[in-house]
Image 1 (cartoon, rainbow, N blue to C red):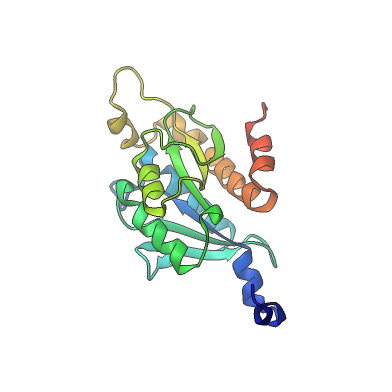
Image 2: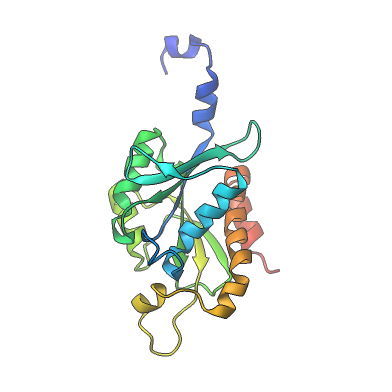
Length: 209
């Protein structure tokens, strides 16, 4: 930072930019996929937007975006749902980071996770994609896999059902009974990451009940 930058009066917009987070819910577009297990990330995005009283709107980037604050004077959330399919999520995410001038460490991606039991939420930063095409594409497009992930457990498919078929099916009747609590927990996890930091959020959500 140069001398002129240090002397420049601090604007309100600067403070907002420094406390802005991009939260992306992964999924596939359209009514055909809306209730699929693979779209649980976008369901969490809907829950977050409802909490802050924001509405998804078309955007200059290939996404629908809802913006708002967690609380008056608190962190700003840019909640996004890419317009394309899961395996092309990277381009929209990269465009959003550029548009809002945010670094990758201000990115939280919410997605379904086969390797976690249903009704369970786990948090991590970085690591491999575990075969998840959306995570793979985001990591490739951003040249950095070190973004924060809210992993929403959907469990493994029963019997010999193919995993690709399983994730593109709607939640079962029994799962739908528990789904509102799962979406609420995942939204709580996003808020905890933003307000408390990843480590504190992990301690809260990874501890035995």
